[in-house]
Length: 148
Length: 92
Image 1 (tube, each protein chain N blue to C red):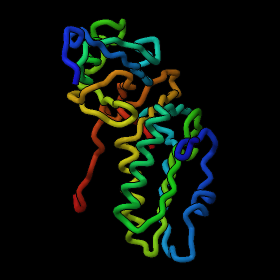
Image 2 (tube, chains in turn red, blue; image 1 turned 180 degrees about the vertical axis):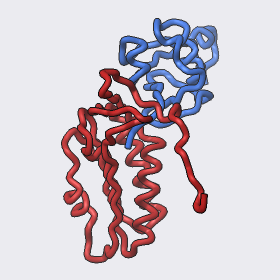
Image 3 (cartoon, rainbow over the protein chains, first blue to last red; image 1 turned 30 degrees about the vertical axis):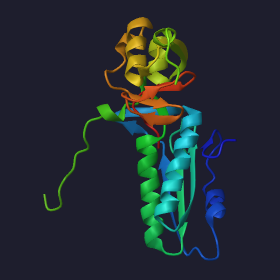
């Protein structure tokens, strides 16, 4: 059974319904979308692949950690296969009685997913080249401190 | 625990999974290895780097998993384990 991975478009409304409840007054959502550029290069489309058995197991561990730490219900889905610009690649929905726990748990889950779930991304660029994305090799983002 | 002449010759057989860039470098997605017991994830890595064409380019310290959970290179492996080497993760 595949609980966290899907090859179909992500249905955010369905994920929200999955964790909604009369006692849950706050729902925080995060959607990760396919971007049209990477390191200054134009991206046409990409393909996500995964070590699916481990991705399911690691996702389940992350969700269990979040629900153990905050009073939340979590829905998490990562899409695999060929995606176009603007498609949702990952969705996290955290529902709680109040917003603080929902926001914190939602943030925790997406950060841990990016850090721990074995998913890889092959990007197809406008110039015809194709590359597996390596986030550890990317240039550090340019950060401008407030007031500068 | 059994101790005897056979102990020193004991081996373990592992299935090693490769993904993304590592699978492309090796030209395959899995390798079955037999190693002397005991062995660690680092021993599996060393064996792959020296015996599988294309995998000499594996990093010195790649991400690794044993039985579908992240594992350190110092972690022991046992007969029948599923070991995986994971290129830098790029989900989300």
